[in-house]
Image (cartoon, rainbow, N blue to C red):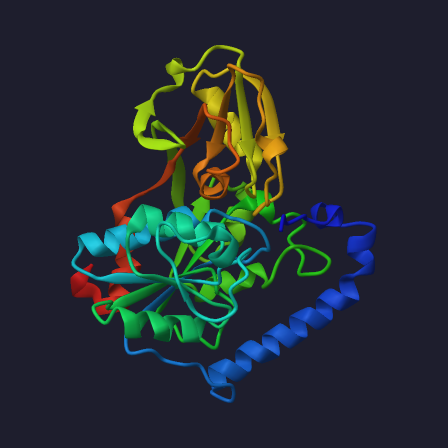
Length: 336
């Protein structure tokens, strides 16, 4: 199921203005709900291990998945045994489901399969994140910290720390739903432990932040062949002018720009909605040409892609010092 953003989310006019009363109602309901959880009138479930939520304020992909990979690997390097919980968006599973590197993305979602492949840590998905986290701990008792991919507004799951990934490109008009893409106002950032900026932030947005954001860049790795991941190559391997790019992610243009920055001259660029369910014809290229895809799309394309299809992985580059507030929340300032 591809995700489409309403066009009025980009402007403070037209339908966005007409929907402002609904946005006010949304704000009132969500604020009351959060206050009820903070007051204990709605019950949050506290798990026997600390939970770190990696989320965002806006609907759409902000770059959370690379941050989850970075965070879990950084915690593991410091002696923790992390597990991951995800909603499993785009998957059909309703109850808790364990995810492995070869799980069906149609069942558990594409991002969880990618996380399982990249990290190797125990990972469960479920619409009820509390049930998914409890199932994870039951199946992997060695886990001593859980990182959730998304779920900032899922207050039923108690959390020790919150990380927000901020991508200004998806903030649109910065109004609350349905007038804009925000699930919570920017003022919500005052209560989080770490703000990670995916891309440059405008001076106007930086001025509204309660603390400076930590910068994240997405660094491309080496290409690997989809049907044989042991085969690797550099951009210079591909024939000039016979390379096609495809992306079904939140920001396809960033993927295309990354390929061009590597010196590739693209014959075509095919942009699809986030979590797109591809058809074979979507991936077709002329005989002798090459198709380049994202690592997230690769988990769904193995049976559909042409023979000469290559995948470009990316890694989040974040200063190690950014982990300090998370470690403080887990073990106190002496651990940081």
